[in-house]
Length: 360
Image (cartoon, rainbow, N blue to C red; front, top):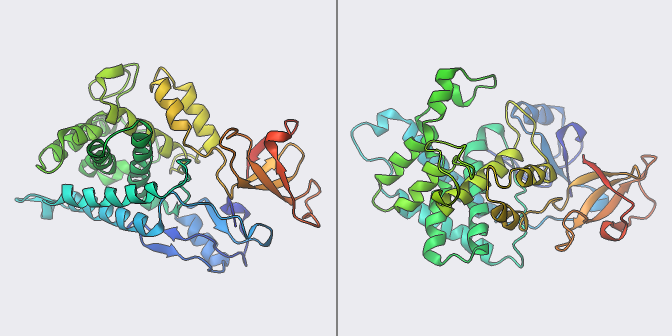
């Protein structure tokens, strides 16, 4: 299979990986043959990438960081919890989600079980989802990234659990903001910006009231927009005054937001997002934390379609742990646009005269 921009998909192509709805259920299943109606529907939902089946790359299958079953259950729990806090009729006069801590402890436990089965910690968050699903899938991705960081830093089981629950719920304060504000694509007014800046405090206030959620987990909501140089909010904390959980969640939040399509901009490629993070070292985030984070990011995920300086179109078939910017690739089209007579691969770490121009 290969991952391509939706603009490159044509009728007759078959879906190789499912597309998910906001509640974690499948919107478009594996093996579905695409037509114009499907393609236009995907475009209207803000989906810009798709995994498609391809004869030349049929044996290229990206290893999932987390099983689809785990993802679906986790996203559904996030979806139901977030919506329960949005519904003022439900919220009025009673405690919302009294078992929230227990439920999310179980959710993060499933995530950690999946991570424990992986031979390496090079992450590939490869799911495709609608724009409406962003906030729920985003919380899940941030939790996975935070879990990997916690493992890399040697956190014990209790620390990992505290971090994971905080990461899954770090943006719960967004449920207290007007829906029109969250979907706005144009510039924010001063009043709208003031409202937006309240969501870390709102999230902290929600989480600290739940007896089965640690106060340090609640600080993930409070501190995920604090920045290493003191330029963040709501308190303008800097360096070690920001709890390590807050630093990790803030970094994971920024990375996943960059590589996700948003109503007001296109997604960054993984390599562009990694460059952004390194440029933010010492200002937005601690440089040592960025280095550790990027050691576990697949810069060119398997099945990504690339254009080389030779004019060839290729698909990433293997990542090199010691040369993450130089993957092994399979040629799917020569410089003249024709497929090769016999499929072959190029080990880019051995061909330094060939450069990657862009993702396709």
